[in-house]
Image (cartoon, rainbow, N blue to C red; front, top):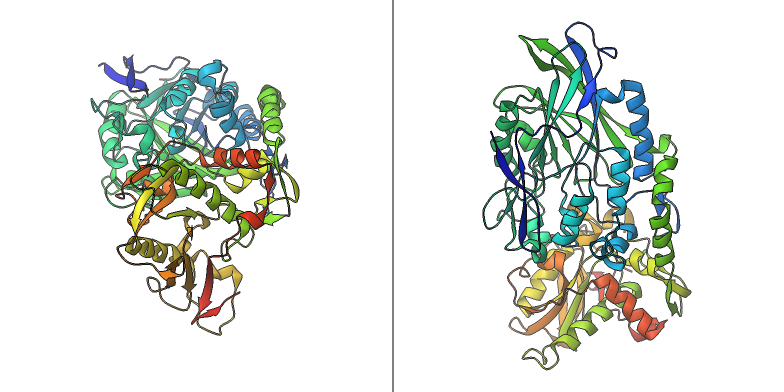
Amino acid sequence: MSIKIGKALAAGATVVAAFGLLAPSAPATASSGHSSSGHSVKVTVMASSDIHGNAVNWDYFKNAEYDDSAHNDVGLAKVSTLVKQIRADRGADHTLLFDSGDTIQGTPLDYYYAKMEPVTTTGKIHPMAKAMNAIGYDAVTLGNHEFNYGLPLLAKWIDQMKAPVLGANAVSARTGLPAYQPFLIKTMKVKGEKPIKVGVLGLTNPGIAIWDKANVEGKLKFLDLVATAKKWVPVLRGLGADVVLVTAHAGDNGMSSYGSDLPVENASALVAEQVPGIDAVLFGHAHNDVPQRFVTNKVTGQQVLLTEPGRWGQRLSVVDFTLTKQRGRWSVSGKSSTTLNTNTVPEDPKIVALMKEQHDKTVAYVNQVVAQSKEQLSAAESPYKDTPILDYIQRVQTDLVSKAIAGTADASLPVLSIAAPFSRSAVFPAGPVSVRDMAGLYVYDNTLLGVKLTGAQVKDYLEYSARYFAQVAPGAPIDLGSLTNAGGTPDYNYDQLSGVTYDIDISKPVGQRIIGLSYQGQPVAADQQFVVAINNYRQSGGGGFPGVTTAPVVYNAQVEIRQALIEYASASGTIDPATFADPNWKLVREGVPVF
């Protein structure tokens, strides 16, 4: 049997790799001396996910070792120590190591080697490829954030990885064939016994078609996870896989953050439930710590194990399988999993040393001073108050789009802007403001667009955004702990609008909260036209906001918003809230301000 697959699709071209029976380049071996007696043997599978550029235990935004309220640690250097311990304990030949995606975006380290010294032009090894190669991953699955910096960078990283990078449901838009390697079979040799074959199917997230539309449209399609698994799992079994694993960059709640136009976003449990022949699903994307969960397969009645190792290298999933030989074939007779906390071990000095040059360069970059701030500006109250620090984002976005549409048919239209409180801990200190201060305020690698909306659409948009607040009766006490994030809405999905004035009446039900929406002192008319500065995540459907995905686009120069903030600050040299702060919205109850 011969299967033709594309290893990477970049700059519109498919790179095709041919596999025969997909024998691994470096077989793992299992000696009979460890955990095997007679006709049973134990093997261990380890999994990380959502590393997001965390190579070492460092917070680039705080310029210090990473720490949080739970005292988690982060980074592949910590993961490496746990992996080494488990390989020593179980026997390295009894273990495999996988990752479920979101690797090459998320920290200034990833940003630096994608944008400042891009590995696509320097030819240097991407820090995440360097670290993962040193640790010895057996396979890595594509996450949605792998596509953020474009297909050429992704192709370069895949080329630099010693482990195969999997994504069975990412297919060529032209041919429908897999654009990346769909699966892998690893052979573990058992002394005096038949080898054990472990099949691994990689699945990525359909939301990429929305979130990275500019990078993938017309080049890649992302198919349904369940349908793709139903196609490939029988292939793995047919090739003799004794154990079948799915590494999926998809959460396990069966829901999506977008509409029904695309396949389900968080489909890991659905795959376990609906596709026969899977022993375990190693999943990511949701950033949750799921030590062990069992789902009953509806077809076979078998229990399928699921586990997710949190995010950023804070946890490592460890899955133990007992295999028993029956009628000359291995089958899984027992399985269990847990997640290990990386804060229990020191960093692997080998990985720290390997990362030092690239880490030091990144630290120097993020500590460059770009401007002086007249006063300290904090985002702590941004989720429920109009704050100057978010107005700074609004000003930069408004200026960029206004200049871009000057001289066009839309030049006379008012320009509004949206921004969300991405980080409550963001601060511009009084005095020197650095790149990392900017990056701490705008933590995502979004680009800026301008779209045309009517007054009615603007109001609908704001009503949708205002569902972020709990309903609180007039006169009732305000509890800041429960006021925001109603219905699980994250801070990054609470959009604030500049350029118009409005109140949000939190005593009213969702959909009836926007009061007094005005432009330059006049009520906004339903048919009034506006240009709205908006980020690519939101414009492409992220968060499910109404009206924006079909709105005419009048500006899209692929300008990265974070970089625009840095350049704007550098050009002026001064950050003075007197020049941009504009308290244009507030929370009220029956006309009475909440704060």
